[in-house]
Image 1: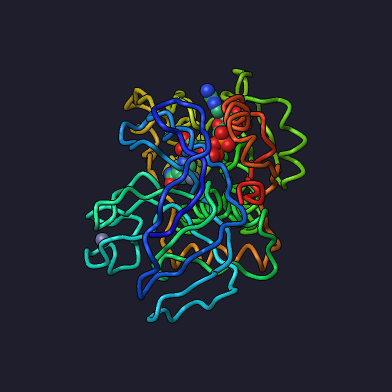
Image 2: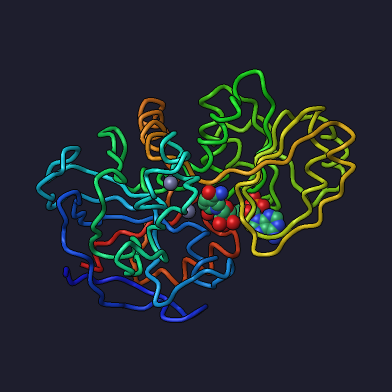
Amino acid sequence: MLPTRGYAAMTVKAPLRPFAFERRDVGPHDVLITISHCGICHSDIHMARNEWGSSIFPMVPGHEIIGTVTKIGGAVKLFRVGDRVGVGCFVDSCRTCPACREGLEQYCEVGILLTYGGRDKSGQVTQGGYSTQIVVDENYVLRIPAALSAVGAAPLLCAGITTYSPLRHWGIGKYHKLAVVGLGGLGHMAVKIARALGTEVTVMSTSEGKRKDAERLGATNFAVTSNPQTFTKLQRHFDYVLDTVSAAHDYNAYLKLLKTDGTMILVGAPEQPTLLAPFPLILNRRRLAGSVIGSIRETQEMLDFCAEHKIESDVEVISIQQVNEAYERVLKGDVRFRFVIDMDRLA
Ligand code: NAP
Ligand code: ZN
Ligand code: ZN
């Protein structure tokens, strides 16, 4: 076993604190990654507060991991010691169900093994990237293109792929009008990627203060959602709405902004459910859909796409000692647009 240091929530809603634990030894198909950076996703906060009801404690969060391969198992073919790599939201899947065989392992019918808060085959609870090192099967590891900085690439492993995947799946491109709801970690990546795909993007935000940022990120329009006129003015305006909001809100109001046959895609995962009225869907044959992260193959495609289009996340780099303060700021929407932990001060 490999002694590892990290930061963990020991119980539900407890502040994160230093935590020593053990990783499994490097197996034949595993790589050992020394972690340099890890992004803070809002999902880490939902999980540390057990808002989705499935959390296991103690919990070391973190699934936007960047590091360097420092050891490889005897059968590893894809990576060498010294490679810069990434790990996202899952570290294994069943590999045999129809979804896995199709290369859609994020929809594994048995269930993906989450990077943290899952139980691996041996029954050991997985622990995430707010830590010094991680052992991962090579098939669930991403290659980080040289053109991307470590800090700017970390959030791509979750925020990047979670927005890239639905944009690609629904073929959203230059003939479409897209509303991105919520300008946080996911939202700002959605704007950047959608713009690179040629899409006309309107940011819909609760924060008037993010107007300038939205423009800088490339959004064509900005609409503040506290203004009721926003919803009248934009009725039947969009082909797609991508909803990245982390707290419960009224989906019906956004459905009405879709044209006939338009699609609203949920990626935000609030703790509380929302009541859905039938008429906004019925009247214009609209659709409500959802999407979860992306496959390993698609995540690699997204990383290469971002390298080609010079897309990185806008980040604020912090030390692990600042993680609890960072969580509070994420909850207030006070981050432009992703916190990334530099693991130096943990080592
Ligand atoms: P984030 O950085 O905190 O961004 C969420 C944004 O939602 C905020 O910046 C804010 O934007 C808006 N917002 C927050 N509270 C709101 C409220 N009460 N009403 C309206 N808007 C509100 O979070 P994130 O990391 O981007 O994650 C967003 C959500 O996606 C979380 O629920 C997360 O768990 C989920 N997620 C899902 C997947 C997936 O695979 N589907 C993957 C990763 C994350 P404005 O200030 O612009 O209003
Ligand atoms: Zn995430
Ligand atoms: Zn499967």
